[in-house]
Structures are given as C-alpha cells and as structure tokens.
Length: 209
Image 1 (spheres, rainbow, N blue to C red):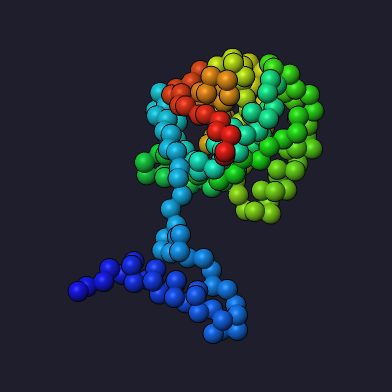
Image 2: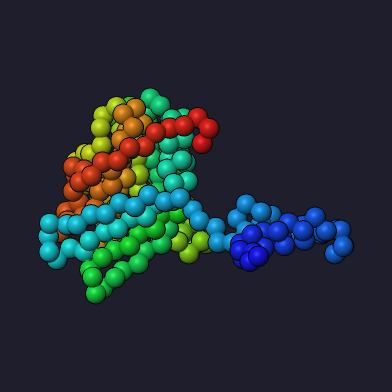
C-alpha cells in the first residue's frame, strides 16, 4: 500500500513534535496546520486603461489587509479615516502591466475627522517613509473611507492628496464605504487618476475579524 507523501510528512512531524523531549525538551515548529507550503487568501482586481500609453494594473491584496481596514473603519464611525498601502511592485515591460501586491495597511491617526473628511499631517507621511525604508516595502498608495457616501474620489482627494503625495505612475487609491459595504480601487489612466470607480467590490465588517 502506497502512502501519500503529504500524509507521511504530517505524521513524521507530529511524531517528532511528540518526542521533543528526546532533543533536550525543545519545541518543534507547529507544522501540523501548514505542514507543507502555506497558502494565503487574496483578492485580485484588474484595470485595463483606455489610454493605450498607460500600463494595465493588476492588484493582489491579502485579505488580512481588508480585515484591518474594515476594523479601523468600523472603529472610526461615524467619521472618515484612512491610511497607507504598502507591499511589492513589479513591472512587466513586455506586456505593459503593473503588478501590485498589497501586504500591509498602515493607519493614520487623523488630525481632524468628521463624517465627510479627515486630515493627516506630514508626520504621518514621514512615519510611513521610515517604515518603508525599514521593511523594504513600496508605498503602493493610500486608502480612506466614505461612510454612507459611496465610493469615488472627490476633487480634494485627487488634487490635494493623490496628485501631491502619490504621483508615481503605479500608485493607487482605495475607497471604502463601511456603511454600504462597497469598495473600489482608483488608478491613473493617462495623466489623470480616474475619480469614478471602474469596478466596485463588496467588503463587509465582521466582528470576529
């Protein structure tokens, strides 16, 4: 009778863990749950621009990032809140595509906040730049909430925030409405960032996240 490798490997790790006292009482890593290659949950979003000179964008976001944003948005209600998106950036030159992998949502502590706006200072910008330097991650973009307003970029969002602080070609914005449970990414198409959503998706706060 042939034994599948993964079954054998799991059994071997379990036996080794149970017999840890034979190697000086040290504890083996807990491989029982992810004993081979760990697989994380992600959400994939893509944008094909109308301008032929603009590269397409594929965004891969760890779902743990959404959990953090939903929790922050829920805690801030009825006011707006936001923060920064960090991760990795790749460029496929042959296919004219940006590949963004979002790994972290770094919240800001708003200087002012109400149900229709929030503000942050250069101190937050410097803090995230320091964090980016320490972790080696790219500043992919920013996120903020629109409680019960729907998802869009206001003129202030575009002119005073996105075009001022996130003007690299690949940098994006994420807007989340925690009341309606909708969200969308916003990318550049030509020289301008689109202010209306290309494709909304659903996000829902769960109290157990």
